[in-house]
Image 1: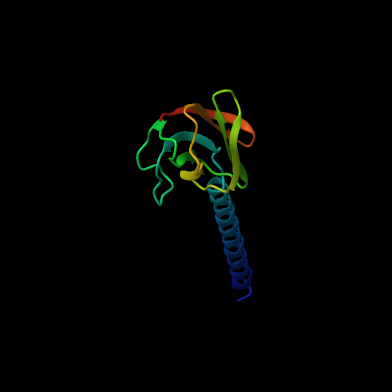
Image 2: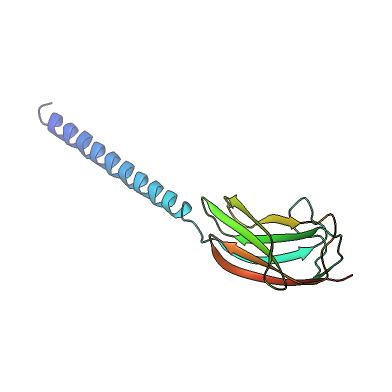
Length: 150
């Protein structure tokens, strides 16, 4: 019996060491997997569409670059990627650079998303050429030119 006690103790010690090593390895693997999943993809503007109407998904239903004086003009700004706190801005200008409207929205995208902007003028837009400039965190990323015709 005296000979068996050290052998049994050594076996328990070996099992305890093996169990601890496996647990440590699994916890390292889990934290590595978590780190890989929490990696963010840089946010970018992928497209800007203009049109007279917008759907529930914030996408323009029919794109156009020519509007009538009494139209509401919609811009759908599509983004891809993730960001915790991002500012999208659209600056609408008339042909001589006169600012017609400037609107910004703070978004927190987690993939492909669309953000809606629009302008309207109850007494009608003057005929001429216009621009919609899209900014992402203060940086100009896209410009769309359009025209109002009578």
